[in-house]
Amino acid sequence: MKSKIWRITLDTNPEDCNLNCIMCEEHSEFSNFKKDLFDKTGIKHRRMSEGTIIKTIKEAAQLGVTEIIPTTMGDPLVSNSLVTIIEQCKLRDIKLNVTHNGTFPGKTGREWAELLVPITSDIKISWNGATKATAESIMKGLDYDKAVSDLKEFIKYRDYWHQTNGHYCSVSFQLTFLRSNMSEIEEIINFSSKIGVDRIKGHHLWVHFPEIKNLSFNSNDETRKEWNDIVARVNKYTANQNDASLKKIKLENFISFDEMQHNNIPEDYHCPFLGRELWVSATGNISPCCAPDNLRQSLGDFGNINSNSLTEIIHSDNYQNLLSTYKTKTLFKSCTMRKPL
Image (cartoon, rainbow, N blue to C red; front, side):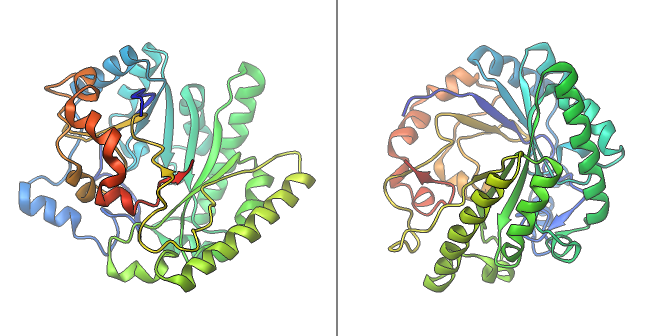
């Protein structure tokens, strides 16, 4: 696999989030992550320094990176580092790709759009239900009605900016495939089409806690069949919707489980991230993929941006060896992020 890094995620503020989504490895009500972090290190909040941010984006530009993702562990809109990231990306002609929980804190949806839309290629909004009850039961702390109102404001300004300046910032819904929310997927698709969302992207649940194990579609043959039936139904529904609507919705990762699949992913499924993207932790450690932190540590040490350059890291023996052998690793054998070739 050829190493061509085009996007880098900066986990600038993983402990800073204003929601407690049940599936989040760090902020869920079922998680002990922050307590364990403090007990082990005495640190309550890991936050990337301004120097690390500037060094990383500068070297990213030299590599030809075209997108930077501000933190996906915490929320970027509650980070004090966001302004620095925006300034550095503008300086080096790099676009932001934002993953956000949909709360738009401290500003209106329009005010956030004025700040983000001109520099952003895509904003992925976490959206886990079509009803207030479902969305708020999954994304603890969410005010669903306000999220809907702010999102409509954001999209209205996005459309205005596109018409007057030419640049288009796509808006995506990003959801976790849960047995508790997929009964509302048609309603989510219909809502997306009406308000101007471009894409619905999802991923299967990482089961971090026993309390949410029953929400996974990849538990047994019965739940996998349940998922496959949803995929067939949703693809048909979306095709009909797109035929009848001027605004076409793109689905991503709505892929059936292989009939013979149990815990291992089919051999011909590939990783969409290795060799293409990197993750930089708040303390500068480099990760080659987006698996949960405790799992990706099993892949080895790939250096630290504060003591190594990005060029050194992607040409290191450890990284190059992983690119050629990743399908033999326990983590990747069961990784639901892998896709068919």
